[in-house]
Image (cartoon, rainbow, N blue to C red; front, side):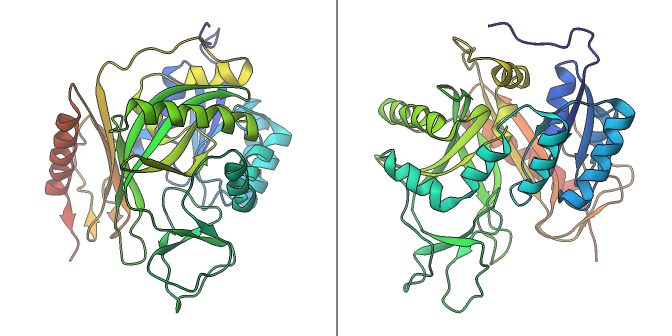
Length: 370
């Protein structure tokens, strides 16, 4: 299947996400003129965008005026969304009524956010997952409280009988194991696996110990486990009518694998596998490719979180492997992202070593705020 590239190299594309850098970079590399609406407007996003807009949130009240203005001035007609809209499905509805969404529809997105229906569907498909409850369990420490509309591990905490629970939450049994994900393309009928990943989490504070902090495109899954998960993907794609780039998160413990959630959008892992945005667009407009290029090396991605009040020096020189770079002079509070880093090597252990060294290199140049 041919890969679409804009014929006149100037086709306009809107990116909307909590952080739009990854998609903006991919879209620009694919030849699009990019408009970005996100929460950060970091240095990299500004570099890749024709115009960018930093909004306080992705709620419809903040997004609608910007979108209306872009349609009037640029005639933008298509959008790709990333993470951050989980709590704002009404914004997806608004986008869907005004532009063409290249990705899953708002109805599909909502269906996956409805955890009662999601886990009931997994059960009907005979796909294992850690036990869930939609009422507070009697026991405590072996349960996690999770937001219904969460993303990136934010808001997940250990259940405590004394804590105040948000009404939009559910409980899931804590499962020991290694967190992983699989990135795949879908056309509502079938799936093509792009790659299996091992995910990392960070404990940012006592109430936030499962925050997504990165991943590597390497997995310890056996061939049998990979085949099993691939079969689950086909069932899920058909049951939920998934389209484009998606990822499925799971937990591996020995021979057991349990599904945690499906992210119905391009995820952070896409930047580890080369140029995939054009594949995403082609699948949304047509059908799956017969085959995908083989993985030639290993790559890792890590979010660098501040461990104290840290300031970016005014004359800070960002290395070329840094992404999502904060502005000079910006102060990052504990638990806030400073930047993200990427490393590519021939072996997984070399990738992990490079990520650790690069993170330390960033920390060594930051200024602690007294």
